[in-house]
Picture 1 (spheres, one colour):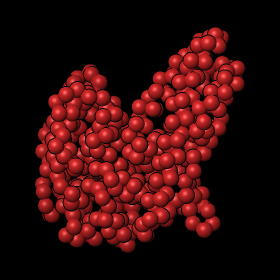
Picture 2 (cartoon, rainbow, N blue to C red):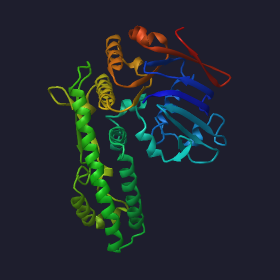
Picture 3 (cartoon, helix red, strand yellow):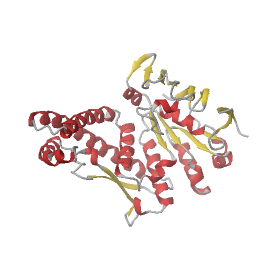
Picture 4 (cartoon, helix red, strand yellow):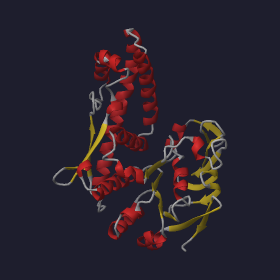
Length: 360
């Protein structure tokens, strides 16, 4: 099951776009601001969440927050639509029937790498936690439902804490929900890390393989045992009441990475090594999904690699069991693909993006 058609209406810089796709890698090139990344963002909206930019629907409408947008796609024999009417939340339909966003994660898996993620290893823990949960969601589809259950219970507990409610019975009910969902969250994360590392070890990519670990952060946030989490939440109530929020649980976890014979920490590595590690993880993520339909989105990745690394990356892309879409400012960045890639040129006129299929 593959993504065979993408249609956009009033999304970002695109008044309209109709694009037929197959398994061949697609390289989209054009000047900065021409609308290349907007295509990738539209594809990322076929996954649960806010897409690769994390933008609210009102910011994605071409004509401003008082307008709407629509994305339609054909995924295998399934028709998928996601849209936002003016001032409304994003909606999803599968085969013309309303669906929840989490249903998208069971149709196709979307994996992406964008320039903002280059700071992953030096950004605050919450950035790495979001990255880890996105990877986990691609590998464990019910992860989104588990995360929603945990977050809902935690928000209710935090409300009680802020209001300085002292009734232990109310806390026990919410803490039980947090403990069960939190243990499942942690098990899912551990499973995802194991699968990513196995996928790295099984392939010779020319990129360094990272050793990954779920760090506890504060409050033993890597605990997969529900009873242990519940006991710790109960013991932490006095401190949490003082803080007005929950200070322990999987929402405090962090992702650690190291590589090489010296076990070099990713955060202490050079900028180039950090980028190579991130690419290694993204390629491994796509490789670990060999039994699932997957689309890999790589935004402006070629510009940060030397010629040899670009050639290695393109060789790996052609071996992946995934549809891949890349962006870059010039077609020359994709020369190492030779005849293995489909080139799309994007230009912009009067504020609207336009597409030309084929090499310049």
